[in-house]
Image 1 (tube, helix red, strand yellow):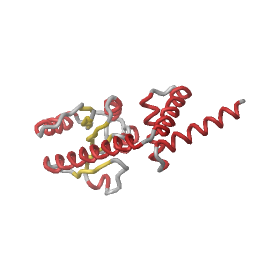
Image 2 (cartoon, one colour):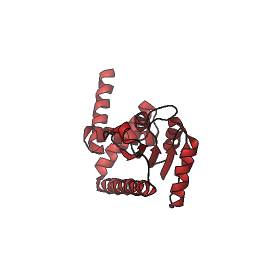
Image 3 (tube, rainbow, N blue to C red):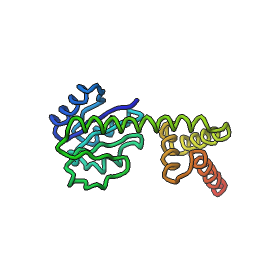
Image 4 (cartoon, rainbow, N blue to C red):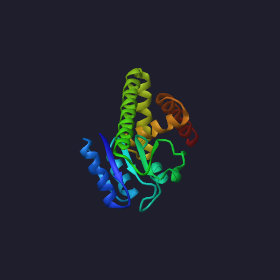
Length: 188
């Protein structure tokens, strides 16, 4: 499920943005005043967008970006001099003062990009042959058993490592299985 989370240290600002989004027909999953609250909400969702200010009660927007799942985008609403064009990956900046039209256009662009990535993932999954699917399933099982991960955590781990290394998931899974096979032999 795609969610929109609004997080600003001033609750009135967060509620104001939520009300604006609702007036334009978007559903807002939650309104928060701290980064920790936003991360907790995001963990319960598959993907989404977090709209936030530069500095929250408990962290800066850069820390929030690090803690969010990769399937989340971050929309930073702040003075341009606060971020000056260099934003972390997965972050879009919208300068203050904010205009409703700009906010809605930016959100719709981010939602369309998420939909494109979702379709790409589905197509990629369909293209995997049975051997690749088995390798991925075996790697997930191994991660779940050895690292006490849930299936979703193991899948996310494989996804993140494949993106970081520039390999597809089947290659990453094969590397994990090969390495763990090496670990088992060295333990004997």
